Image (cartoon, rainbow, N blue to C red; front, side, top):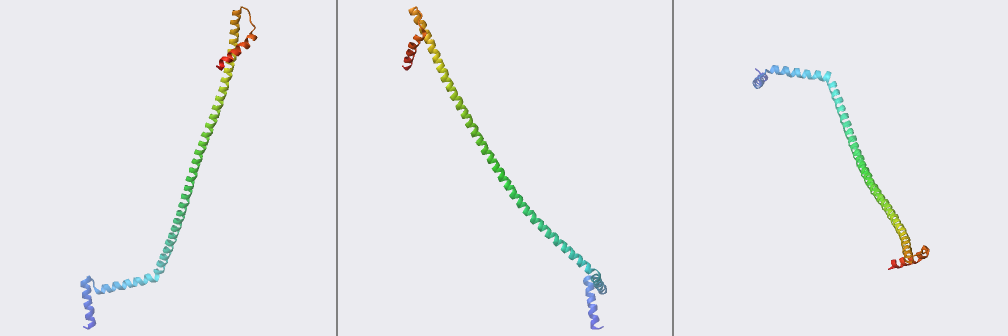
Amino acid sequence: MSFFEKLVSGIESVVEQALGINLLDMIVQILATLILVLIVKKFFWGRITEFLEKRKAYMEKELTEAEKTNSEAFELKKTREKELKEIREKSKNYFENAKQRGKDEESRIINHAKREADTIITNAQKEIESEQKKAKETLQKEIVSIASLMAEKVIRKKVDASDFQDLTIEDIESSEEL
């Protein structure tokens, strides 16, 4: 046996003990695998790489669209938050304006009521003064008439009421001054 044959038989025994398979079986398996790889490379490798490239391009496109959509959504969110802030500010302003208009209306109503009350009080005072004046005049006439009746009884004759009236009015006015 030659050196080469001894080497092959030594390798065979080591492989058979270590792996539990025959060296010839292993070589056949390796050759079958190499043939299979060559067949796949010759007939299918182009299609596989083309499919993988298309898939990669599709995934990149989807990723780009997702990033774009995400960016648009973020911008839309910012816009909506800004609009919401503006709406809140406007509603706050409307509320403040309505509150101020309410206060103004309240003030206007109160002032109107005060003016009406002042008018009513002034008219009442004028009416009271008028009634006092009428009552005073009526009282003076009554006093004149009573005084003329008393004088008539005292004198037993009828005294003219107009002559006696001047005297009585002077007496009443002098008593009021006291």
